[in-house]
Length: 114
Length: 111
Picture 1 (spheres, rainbow over the protein chains, first blue to last red):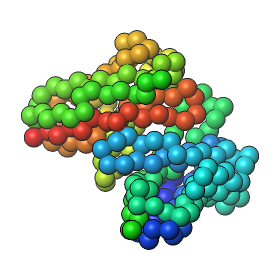
Picture 2 (picture 1 turned 45 degrees about the horizontal axis):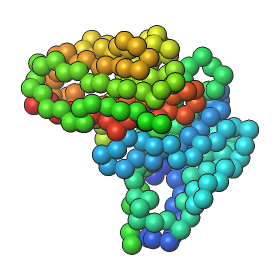
Picture 3 (picture 1 turned 135 degrees about the vertical axis):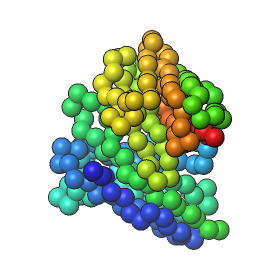
Picture 4 (picture 1 turned 180 degrees about the horizontal axis):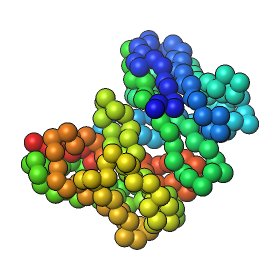
């Protein structure tokens, strides 16, 4: 049972363009949504996160949007750079529950061409 | 502060061998997770500890996979006996609650 779905599976953009990755989830108790960035040979690294009380969070070139009604979130990367080429995972959890478990999406492979 | 460390970074095993992977979480983090990562299955949770107590022992992995947390600063994942289908990257993560912080992983190849 896949509770967090990501799309697309892979994406290629040109340097300077805007990248948009999306996620949807099923469990309405989820209220914390981190995005992770993973380079080959490394573990996933926390990139940006958002709580369900917000609809937008920005960190430099990275912005995540949250739509509670539609149970969807997205990650936008403006001015995409070749160094952004990586696999991106969205995840979800319920803060306040007695568990620290995250449910991960399957990931999106991003390639940014110079 | 030191991040999550994992050793070894690479491991090659013969089918049927026993291997032990090691993880040192970030100091002060109460939660520790072991994951298996493959291209097909993505990130699969193997085990989850909270304050050294086993909270979840990923169902399908119970028979040959055993994670232990001997103290708050060290955990092991034993695979016994190994099979070729166990070839994957094994990731350890720790958390103070909320975000998880991952180690670099151990890439396991079982021949």
